[in-house]
Image 1 (cartoon, one colour):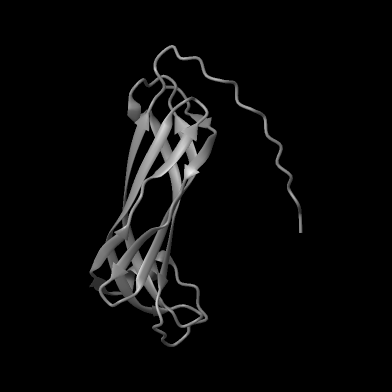
Image 2: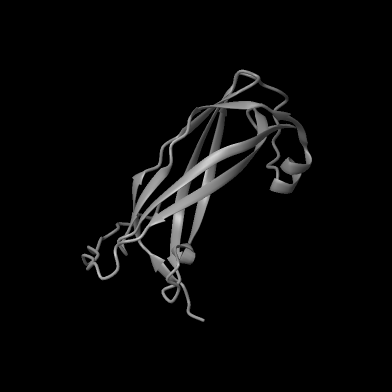
Length: 159
């Protein structure tokens, strides 16, 4: 068994997806890819694996009793009160260019929005959002030579 290779990638596009909630609020979501790995011994397309973060923001004027507590995922999940219907306003796939020549598209979709009984420190309601991610990978043709990666320098500042 071989260890996976970590691949560098460039973002081609990472758009915000938008949904209208039945209560009149707007839900904005974004998938952010953080890591791409590939099993070099595996020739199948699904030899790639991904790590990512989902970002979700609900634009609402609703306010409740502010809480000074930071809630765990378990507490948020346990406090789910009711499922909120939603309609898609815009939903575009993310696109990435990988340094092995592959092109990756990941479609992220919201399939369930649940409002909890909790409120954040500003008094905004807290929601639990369930997502689906569907990747598509277009590999370079076999035998195609790839350009050497260009070394990049990153400046890190300590505050």
